Every structure is written in C-alpha cells, then in structure tokens.
Image 1: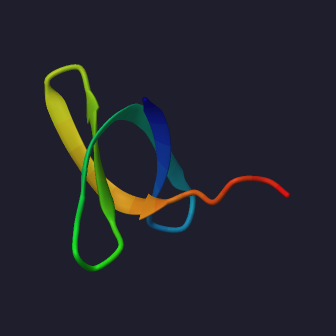
Image 2: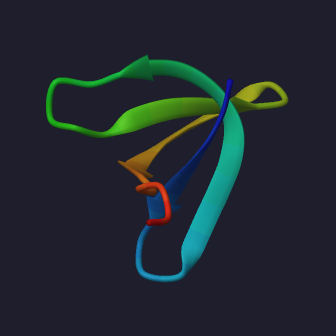
Amino acid sequence: MLRTIIMGTCVQVQGTFVRALADGRIIVAVGDRNYTGRPVSAAA
C-alpha cells in the first residue's frame, strides 16, 4: 500500500508502507531506501 509521509516542513515522500512506529511515525520504502516520517492524513 502506498503511503505519504512528511519529513520536515516541505519534504514529502511517497512509498510502500513498511511498518508503524510506537511514536506515531511510519516507515516507507522507496527503491532500496527506507524513510521515516509523520503520515499525511487523508483529505476531508
């Protein structure tokens, strides 16, 4: 499943969901790299 995360104030990354962390952040995979950030909430 594709998920989008926010890394900082302006950088967003979209990739395959890997796992959720206890502090509310999630890890997504893009190619051979993993990125950690806050998930983007769904639009209303």
